[in-house]
Length: 140
Image (cartoon, rainbow, N blue to C red; front, side, top):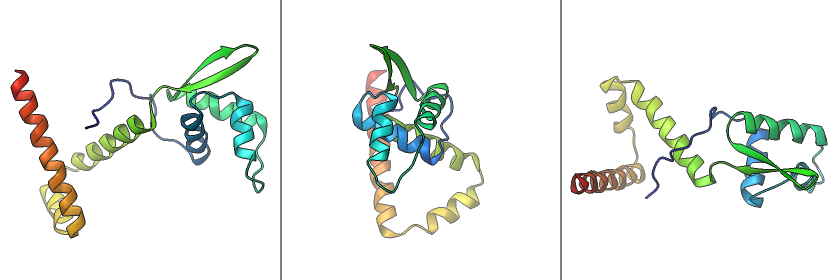
């Protein structure tokens, strides 16, 4: 079961190019500007300036998604959260926004519109929540 990570990026919203670059960093584990630039340009239909990759990497660092370390003469970026941790964080934020509606009629209307597959997912989530509650009770 995935738990909410202790570390969270300062800013969760990412643009399409930021998302693409972050996915490349997750794939490679650690990468230089050149590594990311070459990966993007591997698609013959793409054009992107080397400086643009640098800008995006710096933006992702400021937003708290990446860290940068000097690797020889170059700089290498590494993710501060894994891809699965990012999914957990984003799902948590979406749930919090949904719950912030705090109007029972809206929530009930949403629940009424769920299809069978969604209901099965909600039942699985409810079972996991119950398991977490039991585990917390045992730890007390």
